[in-house]
Each structure stands twice: as C-alpha cells, then as structure tokens.
Length: 271
Image (cartoon, rainbow, N blue to C red; front, side):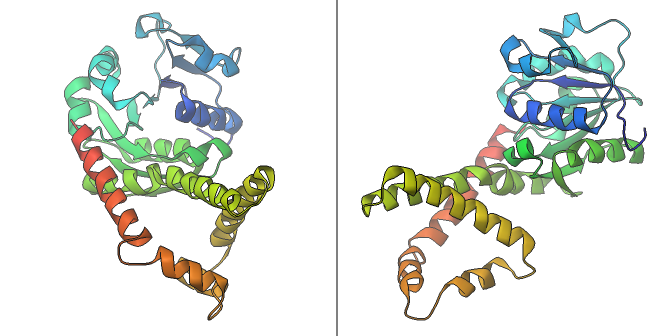
C-alpha cells in the first residue's frame, strides 16, 4: 500500500457515515471496492466508481478484501455478519463502526478467526473533520491496525485506546456530540426569533456562531474554559446569560446526565 492507494475494500452499508468514509477513501486513491447496500439510492453517488451489490451473495467470486468495514445499524448485526464469516482470516481485518457492538459479540458472529477493530467515528467525517476513536481486538496485527488507521484518518483525526470499555463513553461524547452541537444551534436560533430577530438572520447568526466558535476552539492553544472566560466580561451580558446556563440544575448537570444516558445505551447495544 502506498500513500496514494488503498488495497481492495468491502463496505457493508452505505448510509451517511459509510458513504462519507467511502468518499474519503476514493479521494485517497481507492482503486477497488465492493459495497453491499440493499437500497440502491444510498450508493447512487458512487455509481461507476465502485461495485455495488444488494446482498453478500452477489459479491464477485474471488474478491478478497484487505478490510471489511461494517457500517450497518447495530440492530442488524446478528442477521448480517454471519454472511461474511468466510472472509475471516489473516489477510482480512473487520473494522466496525456500529455503535455499541462489542468485539466479543462480533467475533461470535464472524468466527474466532476474525480480527476485529471497533471504531466510533462521527458525522463531521462528511467534511473530513471527523474524530474517530478505535480499539483493536484480539489477533489484530500491526499491519491491520495501520490499514485501519489509514482508512479512518481519511475522514479526520484518529485516536486509539486499548481498553474497549472506553468506546462506550466515546460513543456518547464524540459519536453523539454533533447532535448536541446542532441542538445548541437550533435552540439559539429559536431564542433569537423569540427576541424579535427575523428568522433568516437568526438562522444565519446561530449557525455561523457555532461554526466559527468551533473553528476558534480548534485553532486556539487555550482550553475551552479559558476561551469561555475570554468572551465573558465582568458584569456584562454574557456573564448574565452564563449565570442562567451554569446553575447547578441547568446545562452542566443536564449534559452530564445526557452523556451518562448515551453511555448506558451503548453498553446495552453490546453483544
């Protein structure tokens, strides 16, 4: 594998996340890929660039992918994964981005020979600004980990952990995090309208403020608490607003409860 090419890949599921990753791989130099996607419209954007089939039975004979990326809903794992068990072996690594599904549960469906990496990306991968945390399962080689790192890095930043239990809070924080940020933009827009601003201006202002603040956070060496303080003049308007948001029963406590609830749900989906 060179810096400009990727070995043959099999993508199972081409929804928003699977499609975002596939687009990144094609930009990286992916020459051969098969996509298993029963809904033709989901993979329509990649027509002519990859082979799209509706079921595992239609995968071309002799196709041997270096990686199988599992990008289906976690609830579909039990019915879907056994059809790919024959690919398990030293030459193929399975990379799962299914929320909650643990390595042991996936190996039970794929067979003990399966080398499985559990990863959790997030939707900013669609604009190559994703963040993925991954954990290698038993038997994953250094070469397979390196390949997975290349695949995941094509859509953003990658971090690795050795303790799989960390993936559940990762799922809650970075996996679901974009939804929390989008909710912030949504409620800011609604509040601006309540204060008399025109809807179009409220929308533009809320979106630009959230996006711009994220860009500043990414570019600044200061931590988020200090950046917050930089905006907060003593006895000013922002201080008055934060006094409401940071009450003991308000935003910090609710965010903590939300992350805990999402972490618990990730654990429930395991197996």
